[in-house]
Each structure stands twice: as structure tokens, then as C-alpha cells.
Amino acid sequence: ALVETVSAVLLKQLHALREQEAATAKEKNDKFMQDAKAQFKFGEREDFDKGLNELIGFPNDEKVVAAMYLEHCGTEIATKTIYAHNYGITTNPLYEWKAAAGRWTPEDPSFEAEEGFKTPQETRNLSPKHFRQIIPLTKLMDPPTAEELREWKNPTAEEQERWDSEEREPCDEPAPREAA
Image (tube, rainbow, N blue to C red; front, side, top):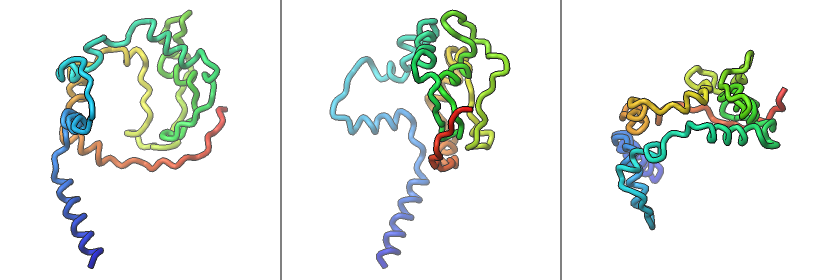
């Protein structure tokens, strides 16, 4: 009898959850703020909603790119093998830099792709909607369009529901592979 009672209560709560509308980003943030013990204020809510790029601009000068280059290519870990579990690929920071920034170095600031460069082939999440997307650094430096900003800040209830319901492949953790 106890199992049936608990099952009935849980089922009722699950149905209630399913009927709720998806919370907006603002509602989620407001709920988080209810639990805060202290709050710093660096502007108005509208300033927060505009985002950091509105305040300081987009990172598109050569100093930022040079710093990113040093982070990926200028340290002893630049060629350290990394196994990316979500894609099932072996890579390293230098390889990832070449995928995003092409031939760019402080001496040759060209974002052209290296001839014959290919990204590692995924062995996990093989459906096209899960393929890894390599976005060139030049594209990331472009400010988002008004449509992209609206889309990122306010997903529709349908989009939120789709994102929440998308099946995700479980991530077991195979042993890292050495780079060829």
C-alpha cells in the first residue's frame, strides 16, 4: 500500500511539473537571487541584462588574440594529449588553436586555415545534430546579430522544451588514446 501511495503522489507531481511553463532566464535568475545572502550592485538590472559586451565591448583586438595564442601554444602543455569524452576524440591545445585560428601567430597574424588541416573525426555522438562545430575565431569576434541576441536571451518555450527533452548519450569514460 505504501508503494502505491508514494507512486501516486510522485505521478501527480510529475504531471504538475510537465504542465508548468518553462521559466525565462530572468525568472531563473530571480529565483537564484531569492537564496542569496548578500548582493553586490554594479548597475541596474537592465545593465545586467545587456551583458558584459555592452559594457566593455567585444574582444576583437590583437592583444586578446595574442593572449589566447600564448594560452594554447606558448606553454609546455600545448602538445599534451587531451581526450574529449563528449566527442570521443584525441586532441591538444595547439591542434584546437589551429582549428579555430588557422595559421595565426604573433609573427603571421593570418587566420587562413592550414592547407590540408582536418579536425579529428568524432567517435561519439555521431548524429549530425551532435557533430562538433568548429567556429573560426574571426566569426567569434563578430558581434552577434540582433536576432542572435534575442534568441540567446529569450528562448521560446518550445525551444526550451526541446533543449530540455533532447536525448543525450550517456558519457562513459574510456581510457585516453595517445595522439598518432
